[in-house]
Image 1: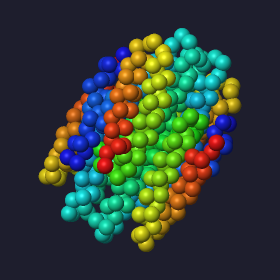
Image 2: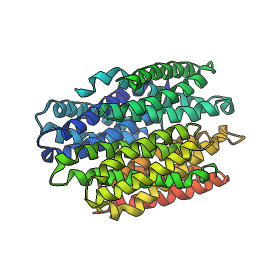
Image 3: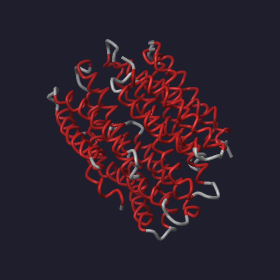
Image 4: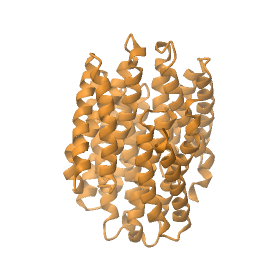
Amino acid sequence: MPHQNYQSCIDACNACAVACNHCAISCLMEPDVKMMARCIALDIDCAEICQFAAAAMSRASESSRLVCQACAEICRLCGEECAKHRMEHCQQCAQACMRCADECSKMAAMA
Amino acid sequence: MPHQNYQSCIDACNACAVACNHCAISCLMEPDVKMMARCIALDIDCAEICQFAAAAMSRASESSRLVCQACAEICRLCGEECAKHRMEHCQQCAQACMRCADECSKMAAMA
Amino acid sequence: MPHQNYQSCIDACNACAVACNHCAISCLMEPDVKMMARCIALDIDCAEICQFAAAAMSRASESSRLVCQACAEICRLCGEECAKHRMEHCQQCAQACMRCADECSKMAAMA
Amino acid sequence: MPHQNYQSCIDACNACAVACNHCAISCLMEPDVKMMARCIALDIDCAEICQFAAAAMSRASESSRLVCQACAEICRLCGEECAKHRMEHCQQCAQACMRCADECSKMAAMA
């Protein structure tokens, strides 16, 4: 499988997309939604780029590194925002984002 | 996590999307691509609906069951086509599609 | 172009995806976000299925009718929710959803 | 509408996604599919990033410029490959890709 080299990065992207989608909808149900608006907006972007990065790597796309670089930046933005909020869904999402940012940065740096 | 009930279906969708994207691109590199054209077309559809279903369930969407029903049908079409071809990527994809079709059918049938 | 028959439905799907994404983020900036939570959740689902439907039709996919049927249902749910809110972004989104639901229903009913 | 500034770039992204999906599936039906393999692979990547860029701009996302920069690069790769083939679907796709690359580059360069 040509995509096996990418497997841990694909897994991190899929896990991050799930965490971001879950965080977005959980934030929407928080009593103080207003405070969560930027978190929700970043979660949606991050879930979508993570799914695209996972798809590109699964296809061993020649654009994988380029996509992973953009994905790493968006994951970092999202993870930093999530880390500011004490709710479990935000803390878990922050961790998933940071792990995905690391995996994607490594992928983007590959020769 | 509200999406925990959905976790095994989300995992099956993500695994199927990876298998379909990998199969699509591997089929493109086969000596007889012509014979793989329908497989490639179905792989692309199936990868996209699986990613959408995973996202909808991660958001505990009220449309999850509806989406999973459509996903199950597309997985079945794709799995049946893949099963006709003896290449490992097709056989693995057929299995991922059938497992995802089963998980999505169960989800769609939930009360 | 094989997808020309689908052009008006593809256009309606793309317009609806734009309207839903715009409505989601505009709802997030409203003073009373809490009241808009279901609208935001439906907007996100609807934007994603509309983009998938547009892609499937552009590929003249054999699953186009199946996808358009699911898309029509989600557009209707989203359009009905948006129609309840007096903000311009919600009213415009309701119109885009209803137009897309009609186009997708026609596509789904094709022989 | 906050996304109005982005409207011509959103339109270019949606038109490019349609052209790429149409080109991918039309290439699959060509007598010499083998020769079209890279074109098909790039078309799929390009369709997906264009849809993501359109969605991000519709949400006036703070990552719009970053996404548009990646989108412009992938559009250029895809447009250059399409331009090598004389079929109408490839020539039309090359044009849509180059137009989208230009619009996205402008967006990425905005202050």
